[in-house]
Length: 171
Image (cartoon, rainbow, N blue to C red; front, side, top):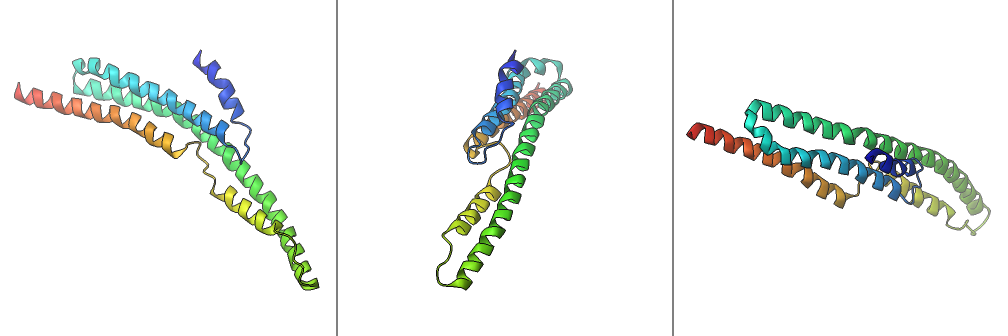
């Protein structure tokens, strides 16, 4: 069963390492593949649906599109919440460390010219990195390719409906 095969991928995504979001990206790709499978199946079978008329075809295609969205949205939102929670926890921890490092730097500069090493700068840079991490489990190149997979069936459905309407007016 496909769900059993995907279970370890989604289980690995439950643990977030903010320096390596590969398990979350893998789970996001897995969820997108499920939705794509629905869309590809729908686009291939849409040719057979056209035999029942425009309303039936449109209703079936809308139903399949809803199923595809329902198959992708819950896992993506779950992964997004996991990444967001990890980011928030790490930012709270970092802000506490930054306050301590700032106090150390202020103390060392008041006592003389020797400032503390770059710990404060390192913490601030890491905080910026954590703040700018994307929360959605997609890398941009994969998302662009996947959006094409969604767009092609939708455009083909619209095109087929248009051609069928034109042929209906002519014939």
